[in-house]
Image (tube, rainbow, N blue to C red; front, side, top):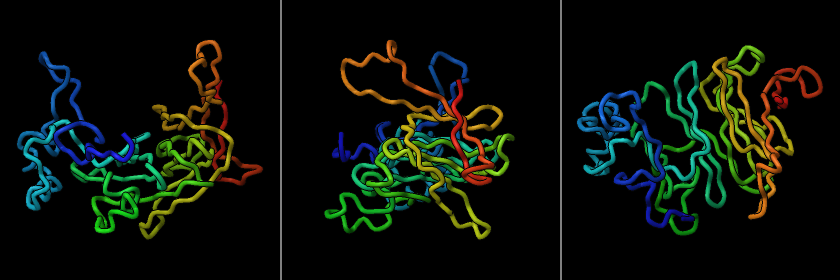
Length: 259
C-alpha cells in the first residue's frame, strides 16, 4: 500500500520491506534454514554489532524474523552483489520524489535499516509532516529526484567483465521512465561519484550479470492494458552494456542488443 501506512518496512516481525538471507542447501525437511550469522537469528545478536547496537537502544525486536538480513526498504529493484568484492548494492524505488541506491560493504554484518518509511532517499517522509526524522537509518550513497530524471530506478550491477575494461568497478543503474543510465563509483579519496552516462529511450525492466562479469538489461515497449497478450506480441529485448570507443567517447557505456 502506498506510503506503507502500517510501517511494514520497519516491523521486524514480518518480511515485507526486507531483504532475506536463507540457507537453501540445508538438509532436513524444511525448505530452508537460517544462516547462523544472520543478524536476527537465534543468538545472532551476539554476532552482529549492528543488531547488538539496536538492542542497546531498544530498537531490537525480540520477535524479529530470523530470515531478515536488512530492512527499511520500499521496493528494492534490483539488488546485486559485486562479484569481486562481495559488496551489496540496493536500488530502491521511491514513493513520491526520490529514487535511491543503498550500499552495504561485504565486511559489514547485516541488520542495516535503510529508513523507509521515515525516509525517502536522504529526505524525511512525508516531507511536510516528518521534520523530526533527522538522518534516520543508513542513508543512501546516491539518489535522484523525479521529473526529467525519471520515476522508477532499476539497479543493474557492478561491471566485472573483460569486454570493456574501462567500465570495471562501476555500478550501473537506469530509470524505467526516462531511459537515463547512471554510473556510481568511489573516487581516489573514497567519496561516491554518481554521474549520468546515457540518455536513451529504453524502458529498462530488469538486469542480470553473466558468470563472466558482463552486464545485461532487459527492455520493453510495454504496451499496457488488460487486453495485451505478451505471448502473441512479445516486445522485450535483451541488451549488453559495452564501452563505446567512437561517437560517445572511450569509456562511455552503450547498450548493444542481444538476439
